[in-house]
Amino acid sequence: MFPDNWLYIHDPTVKAGRIQNFENWSPDMVPDLTKTSLGLEYFCNEGDTLWTMLDADLIVLGKHAIERLGLAHAADIVDGWVWPIPKAIPCMTPLIAPISL
Image (cartoon, rainbow, N blue to C red; front, side, top):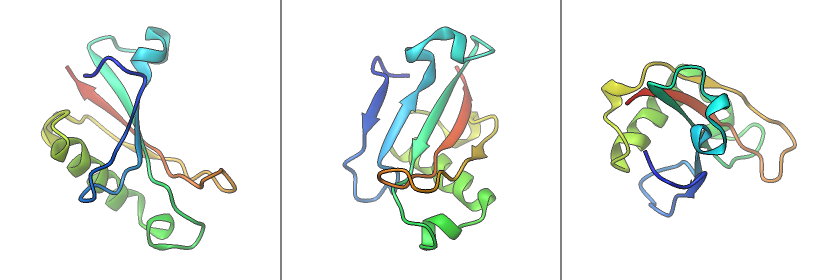
């Protein structure tokens, strides 16, 4: 998808602040080598709009971000999961998205 471990996003139309490609950290982090796993990090604070968004809505937001950035088509995203991480600096809500290659 891209050669780096992570990308910092500077597009004001995308709410994700950073995207990680876990396969670039280690192929062992991706159980199916025909797919990759991306982690989209949303910097937010507990209780704000992003933090309180429904998981399904965050997954849709992440799919749109991946497509908007030209990394993949939203239809290529197999699934998504949301893990809110309280008290992180800064607070973030990553979206893990396996994508068919």
